[in-house]
Amino acid sequence: YGTCMIYGSGHYNTFDGKFYDFDGSCEYVATQDFCGDENSGGSFSIITENVPCGTTGVTCSKAIKMFLGVMKTLSNRRATPLPAILEVIPESELTVGLYLVIEASNGVMLIWDKKTTVFIKLSPDYKGKVCGLCGNFDDKSNNDFTTRSGLQVTNPLKFGNSWKQSPMCPDVKEEIKPCDLKPHRKSWAEKECSIIQSEVFKVCHSKVNPHPFYEACVHDACSCDSGGDCECFCSAVAAYAQECIKAEACVFWRTPDIC
Ligand SMILES: [Ca+2]
Image (cartoon, rainbow, N blue to C red; front, side, top):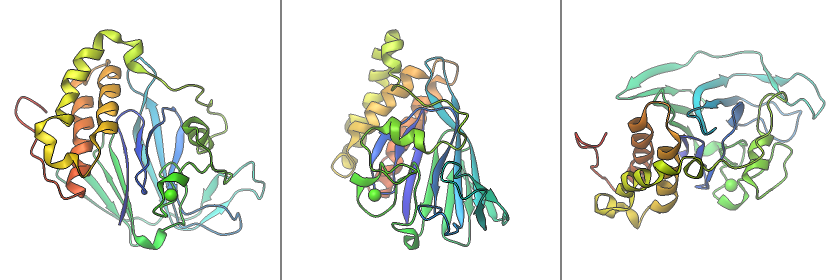
């Protein structure tokens, strides 16, 4: 199975392991097999709805929509690629620990902590057949920034904006740097997040590069200023811990003092 992770304020780790940030408040295609050829029908679409979290303008995934079944385009014109959902098949749903797990019979699984962390798992049958913010799942991370129109780009904003669901949403124009906007939170954020680069996670460092996760953690800890200080920080550390578990490096980091 391939896993795409979306967590905290706009952090993405694609099926092929490309890590990037994109903060946009709109609905975006996380992944779908409705790609390219407009005459070919897709079988599923997962949409993430991002809303601002905190006062610096960063966004968090607050709702997830999963469409399974038959989809058809509303129009043949490329300008309106929104799929119409003709049929939605109800699927099994269960709660495992902190997570809501939805497993569909077509090899699509969604795991959500009901806050800001989403894992999407796809069976290998979908390799190279999907598109969206989670990339194309062909085992190459360098081509994951493929826009809706099929162009490969290097700019995460250009890539991210192409996957918005509504043309009414404004494009994201610049990357948000919450620690620059809230400098008084920076040293606190760096101190708390240093746990990711500390002895606690040592066994994992050689398997999963901690640096992007540390940067993402500082970004979130700076930005989470409208309540839930600790929650943002905990989610950011949990995201790294989750990748470590996937790489078979078990880490015990939750203590009564931290999270
Ligand atoms: Ca790829």
